[in-house]
Amino acid sequence: MDHQGHEHRDPDGWNPGHNDWSTDHERASDPGGKNAGPSPSPTPTPTPGPGHGRGLWDRGERVTGPIGGLVADLAEALDTLTGPEGLDDQTLTETVVELMRFRSLLDAATSGFAARWDARVLWANDGSKAPGARLARDVGCRRQTTNRALHTARSTRSMPLVSAAWQAGDISTDHVERLTRAATPERAADFAAVEEHLVTVAANGDWAIFERAVAMFETASDDAHSDPTNPDDLDRRDKKERAHRNARAIQVGNRWELLGSLDKVSGQIVADTWERINQELWEADLAAARTQLGPDADPADVVHAAQQLRTAAQRNADALVEMATRAATAPADGQRPRPLITVVVSAGELFGPIRETFNGLVLNRLEVAKLLFQADFERIVFSPTGQPVNITSPQRFFTGGWRRAVEIRDRHCQHPTCDVPAEYCHVDHITEHSDGGTTSIDNGRLLCPRHNHQRPGRRRPTARRSAANPDDDPDQPN
Image 1 (tube, rainbow, N blue to C red):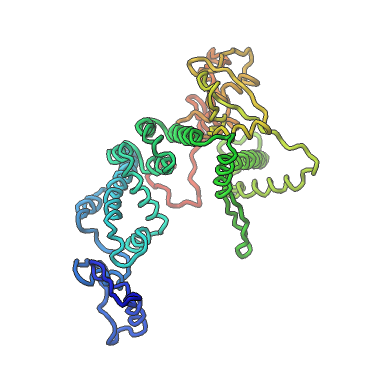
Image 2 (tube, rainbow, N blue to C red):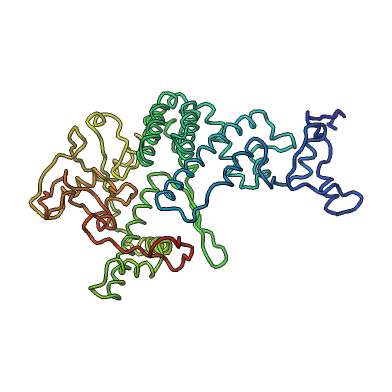
């Protein structure tokens, strides 16, 4: 009953004026007694009609048991899928790739149904206040998971090309979620103009190329809607950045947990310093392992021994502590390091907005303007084909300007699955120097130490199976 004494009921029979928690309390205090209701079925199959919403609320449990309804055939097909045991290498590889692609196809199909379910407000028929909460309870997963899925479902309703490519299996769920984050209401009109281009990049390029294209769109759209010289726009953008910038060190028992979020420029500064110290610690571990095994030890054995000294996660933690220790011991009047900013631009961009730095960080005009007061800049001239102006060195190794030009062009290890930054890579001769290859920019490429040692004709590090991982595939040779 409301304050005027009128009774409200929704179409499914739920009465919001009734004390709907009472049944749960009575059942809990009188199990099996006269007030106890029937035992809930493990696979509830409610039938529409009066009281339908109340029944769902009273049960309030997640749905378990066999998959039924429209997707029963799909569940049956999964049951008949041959397991991984006994598959040859090629079939196993193809199956893993296809199953990962199928996950995105299933996500796309689920998104269409979820969007319609959400639009028809069917989640409210048991009194739930939000669709994510209702779905999380029924499925038995985290609310953040269902909220993210529903947000994607709603967003793609206004992104027809993205939705079509997703349903066709041309792009993955990760692509779609990244695009929905980019297509904010403020950028909606701009996104519609470039949606086809971004979908094409997602379908044909690797993730780094796709991420760069999306970041370029975001900064260009934001710059088009704000003026760095306008104090009101400047204050609004700074306030938006500050809202997401925080850091906390929380003591939990006898340990500490670090939580935080930084803007992209501040985060890059921290990450670069952290990674540099991490690399120093790794080289120290390698040196200790060489001393332990002797100068004639196999490189693979040295790497394995270094990995036993501390794990990558432990080295990350030690690097963070070392970074804080160095900051505490630095002289108060010491000179702050000036970062070197390498801006990569084409001829057409040279007189337009500069957006990308050497390490791939995409900046807007305001961020570039701020860096002008605290960084050194360098310039390398590229030819129309995208190559640095080529110079041949008489030396055996790539040093100085020759190395830097290759670093600027490649930026990371050129193995197709590796993203080790240029700073930690070797500059490798594509045609070996011993075979007449020149030390020139067009004959050089970045390779991390591991992939440089795996070049054809070079001894490949021995694959090792960790003793801490006894679940490795027994079909694979040692």
